[in-house]
Image 1: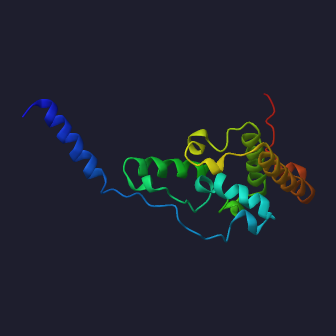
Image 2: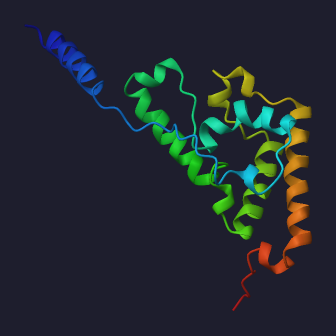
Image 3: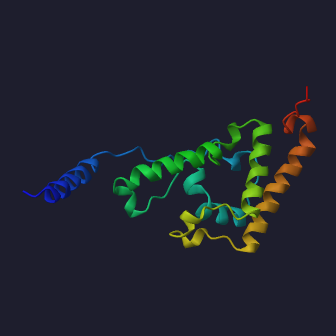
Length: 166
């Protein structure tokens, strides 16, 4: 057998073997700590968050068919886990007020700068592409929550203290 045939056969065996590995899926529908338990999420905002944010920033991902194929499944799992580490709308109520405030600030910046949703996501999920109006709706909603927080909590509790230069 030629060495190139052995290499191709080896690659096929590896590709078939890795199909047996199935990473845990992000499919919990527990909403007991979701952002909606602490702040109003109008239907208009929810209709934007669902397709544009929740697959990577909640505990419930709607997986495409190709999520059943390795190594794509592992890549998607890693990507979703990274997104949830940054911001998890399903766990938002468990965040401290300071962290909630900071995450809303980051969300506004990322949406305004068109860094979210990721381009790699919107290539396949066309319904996640945000219009200028949708960006405005999201950022105004997040800013409204931040304004409510400013009125509710002492100002110094929402911002990280600045360090004094030594």
